[in-house]
Every structure is written in structure tokens, then in C-alpha cells.
Image (cartoon, rainbow over all chains, first blue to last red; front, top):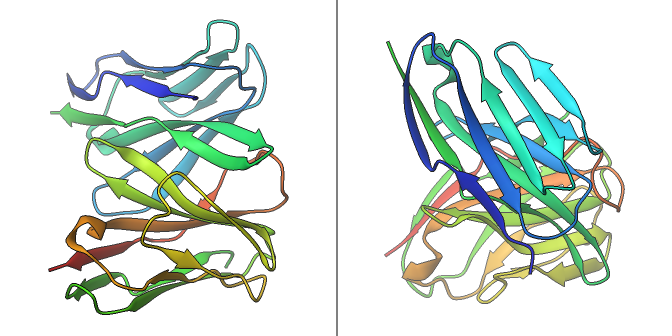
Length: 113
Length: 115
């Protein structure tokens, strides 16, 4: 069974600092997704990583994928308060009787002034 | 505007009273799915549909029903709700039937409380 684990589950950081969220998954997958969720809101797509070595950047966030290590990272550069949210990674599981994204449990990011 | 619309946004109901949460998308997407979100458990798939009249169980289908009579609509039915179905529910869709190229489009969510 495919499992997706995120670390850390909770991250409190100061504005201006850098940090990385890790997403490990247990079996082969070539598509990895990152979402952001604000409290009480829906999930917003941030990045889709489609191949080994893929790197995508948007503002202060950069995501990368290493399919051999089954690891994706979401790097935050010079954090600002507006980045406070819960971040989810998800892995695609498609084919046969299964068609879904499997989500990690999320990382709650709190950026303190 | 391309979107997935869920209704209602909030619902408080009593145990055993049948309810339906509606989901509609205006993007002509083939795939639609229901997830529930619970603290510490992330999002778990309830049911999904690859196209009209094609539905299948996800990871936590017990106590739920779905139907896909039209491409745009995918209602979630709780025939006899119980308190353990108190959760935040999301409908999602995407174009195609294989792994999504650009991820899911999510609805705004339905917070259900069963007392």
C-alpha cells in the first residue's frame, strides 16, 4: 500500500528564515503534487512535478522531486507571514482498480513576525 | 469561471436523517471524486467516478453512496448519517482518466456535523 509521509507535521518559523518540508512516499510514482490549504478553505494547487529531477519555483516556494529516493521537498526562502498555511503533498496512484491522489497528513506552517 | 461547486458549505444534522451533498463542475471533466478530511488523517478518498455511470469505491466508502447520471454532477449521499461521519468533505475533478497532469480542482468544501 502506498504511504505518503510528511515532515515535519508542524513548523513554526520566523519571518526571513529558510526551511524545507519533506515528503516521502513508499512506492514508485512519477507524479507528485503540492497543495496549500488556508484555515477553513479549500486546497489550492501549488506545483505538479512530473519527472525525476523536476524543480519548480513560484515566489518564495521551490519544489523538487527525486523519484529514485521517493522524496519531494518544498523549500521556503525568506518566509513571510502570508505563507502561513497547511501544505500537503500527494502522490498519484492510477491504474487497475485504483484511481486517486494519496495525500500526506500535511505540514502546518506558522510564520511568526 | 472554471470551478467545482459544492453545497451546502455547512450542515448540521441529526443521526439517521438522510442527506445529500451536491457537487457540480463546469469544466467538462471526466473524473470526479469525493474526499473527507479529518485532523491527523489527511484527506482520504470516499468514492470516485471516471465518467458518467462509472463509479467506484475509494478507501473509506462505508456509509456513503454516489451517483453519476450527468457528467457535471456527482452528489454524495449519506443514507443514515452517524457521528463518525462528522468531517470536512471535498469534491474534486480533473480532465482525463489517467493520472492528472495538473492536479485536481477542488470544491470549497462542506463541513458536516452529525449529532
